[in-house]
Length: 252
Image (cartoon, rainbow, N blue to C red; front, side):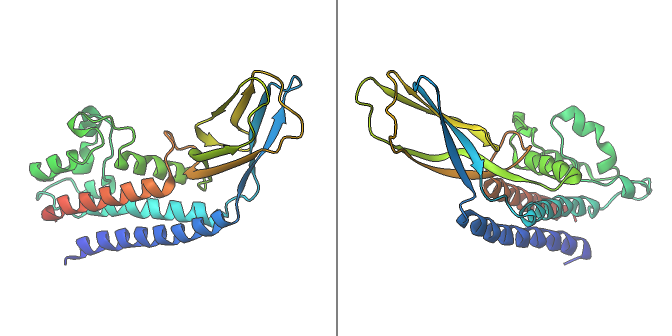
């Protein structure tokens, strides 16, 4: 194994190590039951609003682990690109410019030509084939697109994990003695005091009725749009990076 290929694998394995530790810390934090809710009944008792409550903030180490994993995945691709041979006489400044391009369209990829300066044409086409837009895909939501977005978020602040709705919601309460009851739950990211859902009564609700609400939350990163479960997106990114390494290893 040449030194270039070895550095790529070291970065990949380091990222995978951080993800394994992340899984353990997320499981431990989840056992503390970090999220709850509070209910608010309207004056006419025709509507009950459930508000999100954060009882136990995630420890900073979780955000640091996500960031460390993401940057190692990102750098594995950078190392991969850097170690693809360049033609003799190529402007040596390519070493300063070298970065694995992650672009949203063919025009942007062509504009990132410094990244592939001096490369064999087949290698350039292989790199383009790994781009989020390639083949007419919508780049948003592609694993490599998420890698870029999370990497950019991590460059400016420690990543903060938040609740994501809904994975599973169960409401247990007796039916109203008269009229109807309709329950509506929100979707997306749930920040402190956000509305989780609402109960709509056609006739005023009775006082003192016990209500049990069970919510299973996903965990995502604040600021990541569209939101997706962090362990899910880490798995997608890992597969995409491994695929990229496999497809480009022949050019090393």
